[in-house]
Length: 289
Length: 318
Image (cartoon, rainbow over the protein chains, first blue to last red):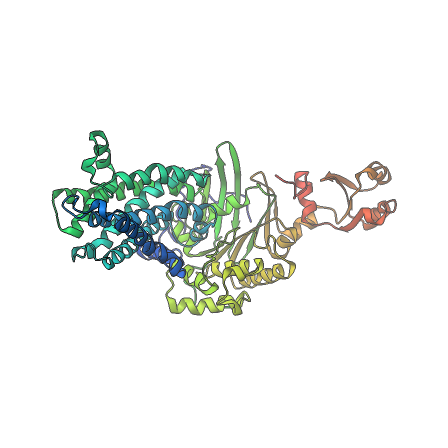
């Protein structure tokens, strides 16, 4: 062990070292880390394995919740809504097509807020992952993709319950998991960004869930059309991601495609890229201290 | 020893780690303060020091989990700040906390981790079997994580760190909180790995651990190296041969009077008085005025060295 420097100049912070005799190339160690695809997939796979380990317990909510909701709405309110089509649809079809995305939104939001926070701060899952040849962004992208997958799974579950009730029942609705996937990506990115601001207190997620996601549920066109909102509120609703996703889901289910659906898709994808990028940038700084 | 396919990491006599004037600042706190060292291949370097000395921070910088504020660093010729993946592909890390997936069994934990190294399933399963038996967990394949004792979890995390067949193994306090049997088992395995050419970097609070494993040692305090060298040589050259550790400080004045004209050095730390001398007889003579339960007469160790270097006990809460 020597304490004399191996570097000729003492320039702290300057990482421009003279090249290693073997050269800073992949051949210096001859051992390659897995490709970025393998790395991201490995992270996704880890989440999938942990989730499916308790598939019955974890799979129970997406099937049972919409069942409860629809039974309550159908039994309790059926009289009240009969004969009042909403946007040209029977109310329960209108509602059911929205509920497909609610579950995708909530599951991905939970995954990337409480879930991420616990993996980051309590379980130290990321610490052990970062000991392996993974980069912080591999972990976070894997996380977003997994939340998207859960979104797809949850929307499929809701769709299957709805179909049992004889609602929707269109061929197009089979594309719902895809919209569920995109919804998952959107709320995973948003939730990771929120998580990047919650440093010490897990209770702060209450602001996000009650202050942001609940209003989305009530005012973004799931329960009633956005157009019924008074002027300033409807503009706000139009700016929020869920509004566009719900619109997209209804087009998938009922085939009433229009130019606004292209915009909805573009909105969602740009949202994922922009918000996801920002969230990853902020969380990277917490993962590498 | 698990036998793996010949590793493909380049082997030569260049130091595996070359660190020069590494500094890490968090705001106004300087956690690592100009630390320099090199670790030749197949040797073990220990970073020893109290909590807050900067050991863990230094390790994280080495495998790219932490960013340094200054200094130059090469691990396998790579700068971990820029090429963390290349460094980590050749490095196994045992973090301070055993973070295992509690939902899964032992083998699933290992399989999932093997994926992070891009190891295919067949190779992984063979390696997992070898590594589990190497760490004496061969019968725990299907055990749930929560069924494992602390010592088993720690051994599993070490086995997990070996999945990538690392040329460098980094361990952050590998035996903290474990019982003596497990500690000896871990030490034995680490020695085997080292003799098969694995370079080891570890942090520890324990003098005996450092003494057992390390070819060289850096004793850190407040982010700086206060002493460095081979542990045996440090103790032989750096300090008297014997120590009299007195629990009752009130006898101090009497002892000091009695010690006049003799080559005895005194230190006070943590409510205890230490007397050091090269001749055992001198200390035995001092101990003559003490009751048996009030003192320990023993050979000096690294702890005494630390005390001498820093003027305080190693276990001071920091």
